[in-house]
Length: 65
Length: 140
Image (tube, rainbow over all chains, first blue to last red; front, side, top):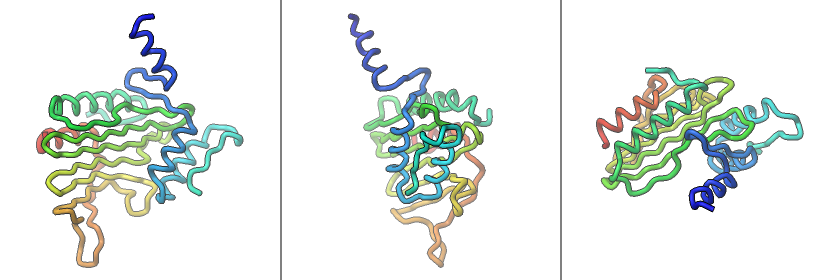
């Protein structure tokens, strides 16, 4: 296996990066936002609202509690 | 200058990234972040970057963009230099920060009025290219 193909496989395990875009999972993103904006309830509520806008109830995330 | 929106966000922040890297090429001590992040099945784009130059200037860019509302949920560009700081901030959901503004900190202290309120200098919604031009002009 070529070294470059090995690294591309490793990268694909950690997320997709195309044209400067990194795709991160919802849960990971929610956790990061909770940590980053801890104490800023208004902003966390707004992020939460956006994340829950187009998903089923079972997928709802809660950021501001 | 092309107004920022959900369709050109990636393109504009890729250009921001490239230009910022070019400005500090070979003159950077610490770098973190830089790519546009697109949370899976979510409505946001996120761009986050921290850079410390060898001459001691710290640049922090932190942007969260709502693709559906087509507006920022939050942006903050901090430029730290000589114990001072310029902060370009916009946070529409916040009751005090709903208008784009600039905060100034000199000698480690925020500019405040006699009543102790931090002075928010109201500004327009800064475009990433304008922030870059400012960085290029004064801090490169």
